[in-house]
Length: 325
Ligand code: SF4
Image 1: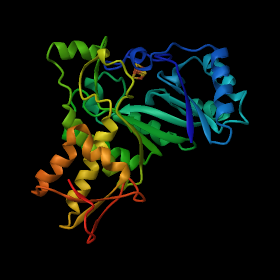
Image 2 (image 1 turned 90 degrees about the vertical axis):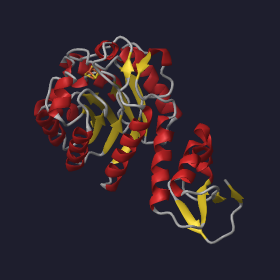
Image 3 (image 1 turned 30 degrees about the vertical axis):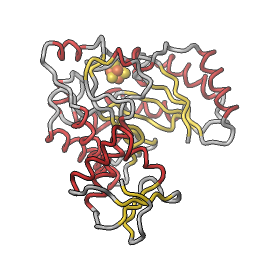
């Protein structure tokens, strides 16, 4: 499934959230009807066979005035027979049964909720304007749509306890997918002011990698897909004031998960890995390889590279190694 993202930065938002600056993240302006139509036309022409959704991201779609929502829906539904449906992202406190019926009538198939945390203290400290109960209610109301939940570890008042609660509540809700964005301090946000005054301390990169790996493992054990971790890599780094941002954050998390699985299942034999994972072991200053050796107390690791092995798998084998790392 492929998605055409259409960014409507801050449109419909009741206020600017303390950590958010969509104009910096999306680098776009709200597009005109004509722009939208042209982009969808091109998207459909380029991807005739794939399953496709057109998505409105970066604002609070269901808080827009209904006329504006209808205008956006109509621009997309001109192509109704070429796309599978519309995706919107919105806040959980702007969902009710009437809004959902309106969305259903207009070909919305997927709703992503910017929940961020299911802990009341975190939500209050981050001035989100709703509590965990409202967030959960919105998730449970979204029955006839695919549900995506966006989470932000590392917000003010974040702790092991709030993380556990957020993970468990998400598992209970059982959304179709999750996106995880560790909190970053962006320029021109309230969080930046708090950070500069020493009132807010973001997660360290290593901490964020461990937390996000843990979240992914728990969600995947419960068959909840994690479709995105970390902010996209083409953000202008001058706009990042502090926090666990890394261009390859997703890869670092994947390395951490693989490392943990290898250690947990270690057998003192040759390690067979996928060709797709060479860069995980050897990239990033060989950090993963060094951790593996340290944690297994080995000077060198016997390796076989296998072209057919899936990137999420590895094996221990009696076969002689092709090389030692
Ligand atoms: S976090 Fe969501 S609701 Fe808040 S300002 Fe950003 S886009 Fe709007």
